Length: 442
Ligand SMILES: C[S@@+](CC[C@H](N)C(=O)[O-])C[C@H]1O[C@@H](n2cnc3c(N)ncnc32)[C@H](O)[C@@H]1O
Image (cartoon, rainbow, N blue to C red):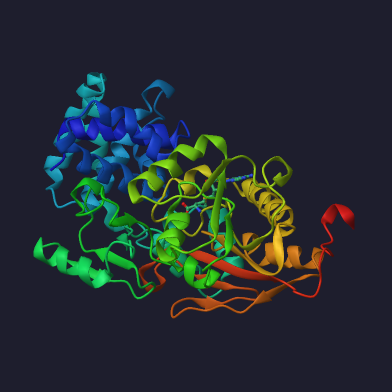
C-alpha cells in the first residue's frame, strides 16, 4: 500500500495539476525524481486516479473542512483528495490510508496539520465515504463539458462521460516491417504476458496489465510502439499510399507518421512537419523504429516557408484539438480546458485545412483527424471548409466500430476498446484545378 512518502509525493504532483495548471505529464516529473524508482508506478496510479475523480471529491473535501485552507497549505487539499481516491479504488484498509495520509503531513513539512487531516478523513469515513457520492462517471465532468457532450451526442453523452473516467488500456502497435501480430503474440505468450487482439486494427494489441515500456518485449528495438487502437485506423482511412507523396502536417510525436512508414515501405516520400519544439519527439521515434522521412520544423499553416511547390497525393491533418475524446488518458484535460479554448482550436483547425488544401493534387485526398468527440471541432469544421472550397467533396469512410456522421466517422471512447477519434476524408475533385475559395477570398 502507498507509504506516507508516496502520498506526499502524489499530493505535490496533484497540487501542481489542480492549482498550478501544469499538465499531468509535467507535474509528476520533479516530485517523482525524488522517489525511488520502485515507487513510481504506485505514485502515478494515485496521481492519475485522483485527478480523474477530482470534480467528484473536491466539493466533498470543501464541505468537510471547517474553513478553507490557507493558500500556502493547499497541497493538503491534494493530500485529502488522494486519500478519498485510495479509500474508493485501492485495496488498502481505510485505517492504513488514513494513517499514511496523516504521516504524509510531516513529509510535506506541515506536521501541525496532522490532526486536521486525521479529523477530516475520519469524518469522511463516518459519513459513508465515497458511498454517498454520485457513482456516475459524469459526476466527475465539469458542467460546460457535459453540455458540449450532450449537444454533440444527445443519446450518448452519459456513456462518453462515463467512459472518459475509465482507466485506459495500454495498446501496442506491432511494426509489420519487423514482425506479424501473430508472431509477436507468440513471443508474448512465451514470456507469460497476456494480451488481447484489438478488433479495430490489424496491428493493435492490448496488454491485460499495463507495464513500463522498458518491460515491453521488443519496444526499444522498434518491434512495437504504444498507440491507441482507434488512432491506428489512419492508414486504413487514408488508403493505399504506394508510390505516393504524402504529407503529415501535424506530425509530433510521430505515431501516425511511423505507422504509415511501417505499413508502406514503398511510399515515394513522406514529409512530416510540426512546430520546432516538438521535432525532437519525432526524431526519437524515427530513430527507435529505424524509419525515415523528410522532417520539417515549422508552421504547417504557412506553407510558403517550407513547401517546395510539388503537390501531395495525400495529406494527413491530425489537428490540434480539445482532446475531448482522450480524457481517459489525459484526465487533466477536464481541469485545464475552458469553454473559450474551443473557438481558438476551431480557428486553428480551419486555418490548417485551408492552407494545406492548395498543396493537394487534384484527385488527391486529405484525411482530417481529431481526438475529439465534439461536433464543433469535427463535422462543423468540415461544414465550414466545404462551404469555402467548391473543389472539395467528402468521401464516405467506415470501420467495424464507431458511427457515421454527416461528413465522417466517429469513434467514441470505448468503441472497440479505443479512444474517441473523428476522421473525415476530403477529396479534391480531379476536374478542377485551382478553384479553392478561401475565406479571405470570399
Ligand atoms: C494531435 S497532435 C498530432 C499527433 C501526431 N499526429 C501523432 O500521431 O503522433 C497535434 C499536433 O499539431 C501540432 N501543431 C499545432 N499547430 C501546428 C501548426 N500550426 N503547424 C504544425 N503543427 C502544429 C502540435 O504541435 C501537435 O504536435
